[in-house]
Picture 1 (spheres, rainbow, N blue to C red):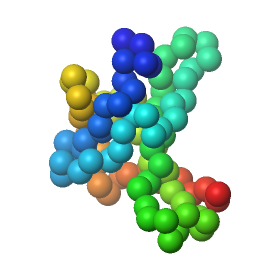
Picture 2 (picture 1 turned 120 degrees about the vertical axis):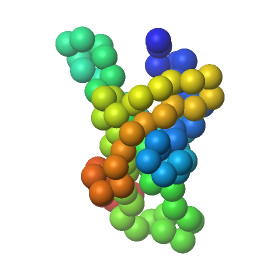
Picture 3 (picture 1 turned 60 degrees about the vertical axis):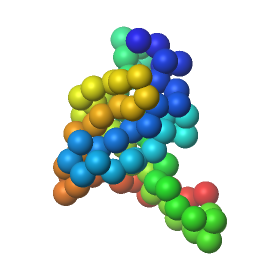
Picture 4 (picture 1 turned 180 degrees about the horizontal axis):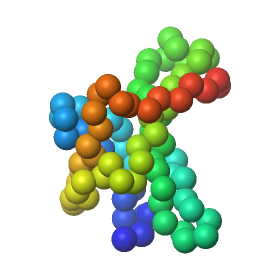
Length: 89
């Protein structure tokens, strides 16, 4: 599967059915030696009021992806172990 095949797919968490974002809004970390995707980085959805303040992003390890369908990607992320990273805009 190519990275372009993932664009536009919605990411849904298996644990709670939450829509986490779409691949088109995300970045990926690729292993330069193998060319394989290591993780997907999703910006945390927010409102315009918080546009200029510190924001968070969700890092989804490739191993957490359980199924890639025609329209959605199912990931298995336990809410207690979500990996958020803060960054400033």
